[in-house]
Length: 252
Picture 1 (tube, rainbow, N blue to C red):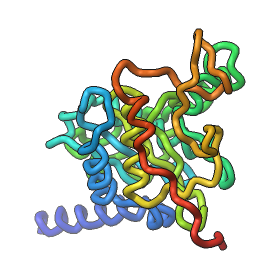
Picture 2: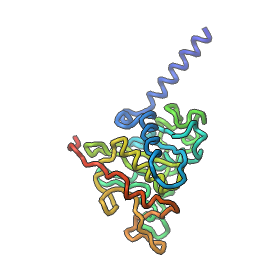
Picture 3: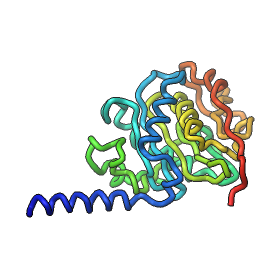
Picture 4: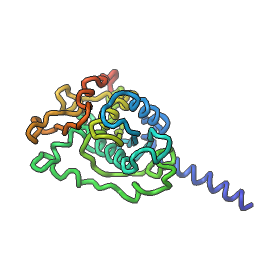
């Protein structure tokens, strides 16, 4: 009888965990799909150190829908980058609109002293009770304790991108972390493209997207949305990244 009760309790607990995931996540990639897209992105040239990566997807309300990694286990990536990937996803979602996409890379210069958004990085703290809950062995799996909860946080360097479907609807965002911030951006860009959620309506970059901007000279960004250059080949690789998709049908 005791074994039966424990078995039933495990079923109820699992059901409750899945029920905590909002309906909005149905439109977004699940853990397996996110992991596959992330692995595909890291298999290409992105600059940086070629490290294993974390990725997180949030819905439009900021609730975590999926967390994934590319290594053989949860310890094969920088442990601190799990929460950073969630911060990036939260940031790209929180500061993008249906008609204007902002990547976390676009915020780098704006939040520096004297920038137009100085102080933004302290405006929405991470919920540490969400960030560090659960078993470490389940981090990056479908049972990651962040799933179904709002993580919060603001991150202001490359790796976070809003997600738009073919109708142009803003569904949420993806955050990627684990390498140089510039490589993180490149990997996030490829991941979003693979997920077919890159129907970006407009942005602050010269090509009217949320592409990373390398225009900092003498410590100042020309247009106020520039990102610091990293030491590797990341900036050159940006020119080879796939173009964003065009909206094929009007949103309802």
